Length: 448
Image 1: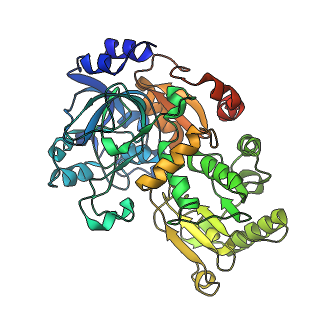
Image 2: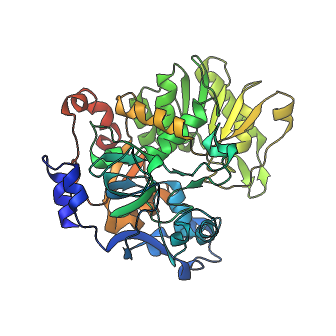
Image 3: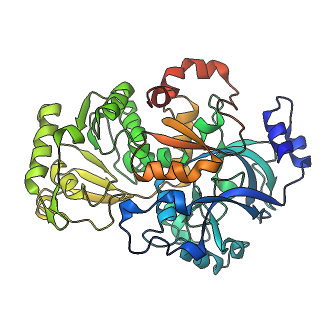
């Protein structure tokens, strides 16, 4: 492993050098264990502690099957699916791994293990490729998107997210990115943006692609110039990218955040219309089962005050149960609520009168197809969208990092170093970086 790191840090190493490196028989990865899947049984979601279930263990190195690549992971990041995996909600992910192992896909059986190496982002270097891989070779610097699919079904050829066998790598598959090595399908790989460090490059893959499909794509909100876009959690992982996409696309984001610090962050992105939920004291539920429509109306009035009387054309919805009824209410007549994630709960309740009588639409959105992921990564590579990395942990503290995300103690994205020995490494285009340094550092410079 030291030889891999040495080659990664060398300015002279070429593809042949990486191809000649011996591959370690095992590596360190962040895992949950099947035997511990019931450790939080009976506890409230908020009380479950990822720091207790996620641990770093040595695991055997898998051999790349046809169409796969083995990656030396320099850095990764925390996504909410890692939170779900670590607290075993809404179900333990080992069921996903067992179902995958029963498929006819070559090498799928390897994914059914008593451990699950998690993580759905990475930036790193190709070490080995399996048979049939032609686009990528050892030594290539890459990032990975998390759509794992072989496209054997005709359903996926117009939109790969509609393939019945699509899975989210590191969540519904094993050998994820929160590790020193990772196994991916080669069609997950994209060029690493040359002006970013390893940890910055690893921050955007899942959330930026998800926000792109949800907001910009014809499969999502189809945002256009002049649209008013309500962005929930605008200083978080998804929301910080949605805010940038809205601003870049000529829309007007109305950014909902919790706390003045997060309000300052989204204003620094260029957003002018900000709602601080904590300051306003919004409570959309009177109790666990009783919604409060007066609070929906109060939010709607607040939005109109900020926009000069306009309701949102698009609601960028991901908190789920806590906010969904309010989202349906405040969307304009004929407007669109695009929903994913449901981090506050999967069971949504809303008043359907405000949907059907006002001709609104609810669109479900899940990650991104290949084309959308590449388009989103291109924006990062060109410096048009910046990573919103706020803090970085060593791999040994991955449980603590995930717990911070679970408890919403973070802003933007939380990074995790893999094989990179320190932050700040991996930049290849210093001139492009210098042009965009303020944007790149925006969340990290204001993280305290």
